[in-house]
Image 1 (tube, rainbow, N blue to C red):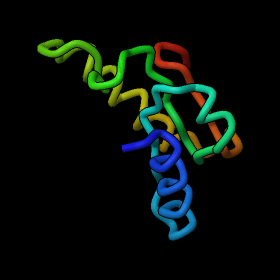
Image 2 (image 1 turned 180 degrees about the vertical axis):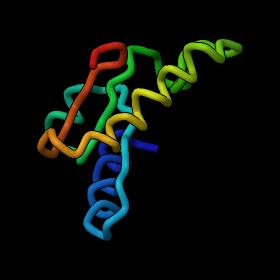
Image 3 (image 1 turned 90 degrees about the horizontal axis):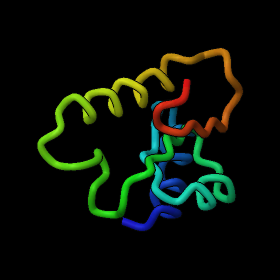
Length: 85
């Protein structure tokens, strides 16, 4: 699905009261569209959680994404880069 479409859908889901985190591959799209929460990942399209067969990396991606939902202090929209906190 298109990066822009996912960001717009996430914004609408948030308006309904459900928190979301977009796993984003195009930082410029996230900056332009402004999904409520986006985690920019430096991986190529088709590899949303990094290389296959790397559960340690994949778990760290998911934990960072979930931590963005727990952050009730930072204002929305939030854009984080994977590996930074």
